[in-house]
Length: 255
Image (cartoon, rainbow, N blue to C red; front, top):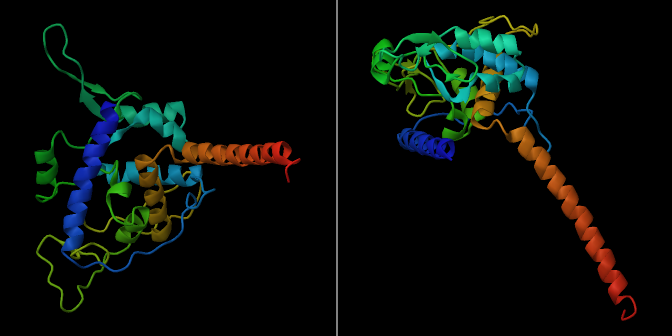
């Protein structure tokens, strides 16, 4: 229950900030690449989720947190137990106080939530020129367009600012970002990572993969929910057929 309440509060805050940004105007219509989980029978592509994690872990996690996802949850995207332990132990987190009341740092464990790259928000903002990098746990649900927004944003940087636009110093022009002035510099480039499955790391591929991973982070139960929904629909169809047959049997002499 506590996690659900925290998720709701976080989502509400992100939606509020998103609404304010959209109200400021700007931003071209989003690209819609089409994702595997769209539609009634759609499901996550686990290979894509793992590639998306490789982008997040190697690039995004240097600035952004993922505080609602535990390391052990990464088994759902295809990481082995040893890989999860290695990813978790790559960062340290404050341990519980010892008998003398001292708090020491320890390597992360699979049961820990994804450890933030910065000790606090002030340190994060200071390291990023005053802009606080948002936590990405619910980003795919907090922005209008969801994964399409992320996919478009990651490819929307323009080197030359179009005529008629004024971008403050320290900001970057992004044609899909509301207001066009974004604090985050371009992140994706050709062959930014070497995917373990051998997929060619084009900018479009990287953008699609990180969008898929962040959608999974915000909605990890999607596959299970759709499977349950399909079972319920089949049950209702069979139940309806049985009721109709029963009704025909009961009323056959009257008709």
